[in-house]
Length: 293
Image (tube, rainbow, N blue to C red):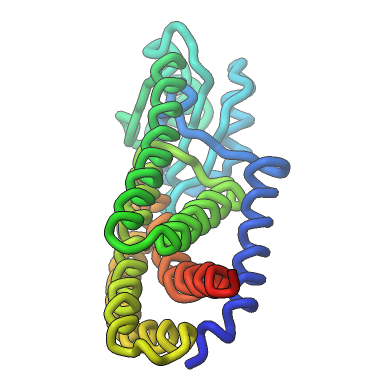
């Protein structure tokens, strides 16, 4: 298959996805940071009967609670919800007051107590964690750039880094577009996606390097197309196997691991695509640019 010949279509698809992702992140919706990064109180509550978000919000607003974020998690029939509050001084009192308000409105017999989950993070800690998360991603990308530049050639590292930024941007863009929460487990998923995508890219790069010696007289586009074809079966088998695991976690893992698994699903799909249609074609374009000069 002529992967290099199709690279312009790949660039167009990637460009559209990145544009939509950046538009959603920067202009449209931004990020929905979890309390890990913003500070505040998170309560996960499960009802024994069918309840809607609007009913919960009305019940809490009657008791004077405003500015709460209320989201359904999991399947509708599970009747589980996340209630998030901004940072307050008396966390324990807030949790007790919300519990009382829900009992008064829905009845104690219709609520599973104690709550499924309660988390409290101070605003200062949340801000520090957000800064550390950004640093981790940047440091990871810099170290990868240096590693690939040392292991292969600098033009190879440029292709790999662009592909990784491509993968991270689209994954984060999907979270922004779907208004999913960004928290510490999601940052861990992003870092794992970087490693997973890089592994696919390095497998292709290794074969390109080997074929540069074996196919010295062949044009660069043929060398890269051959290298991708030779590693394609391995790449697809690995990606499909990992994807099936991520989908299983997404479907059966429950609300706590739901978004983590979702990040993996997007990352695996985009990472496999980028190793074929982004990283290697960029190496080809940089190679041809050098040859012309």
